[in-house]
Length: 181
Image (cartoon, rainbow, N blue to C red; front, top):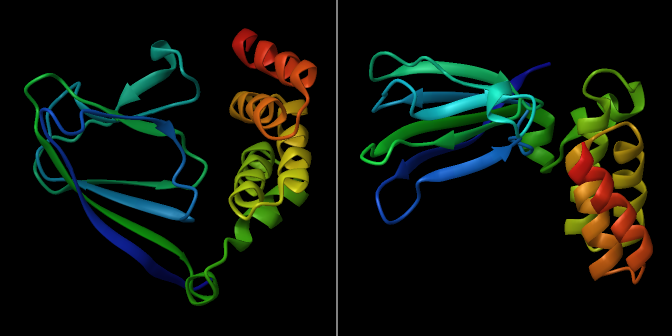
């Protein structure tokens, strides 16, 4: 697969503006390269498998310009020490045909394959359907991912059912599942 740069941005975190970026996926890119321009130990980019701090670790950037590269299915975020102003250069890549078409073909492949990234991909397809206004398709994708144990899908399905699809009992069921996960 030929990869192409889909987006480049400079991300700044400074006191009073932005200090953290919660755990997330770079859902719009097959791969991400992060160049930390102001590294500091125990402050900045972290990766992890869950919301519990014990399952997360800071990427050990040592010198300005050090880089980390990760795939779309790596959960990560940013958490800064109080006096750390962080600047990073972020480069997102995806298959050239997806850049040209504005698509995310790898999600369909992963979701159908049901492998390690299957639930994450199915969750992302749910987000795309919700963004497009197809709430029933979104709920179907979220439910498939939630039934596979995807905590974020459980939470999103609960919110969707309760706020937009008029099913408060279903909403409570999935929100309780997410809270217990």
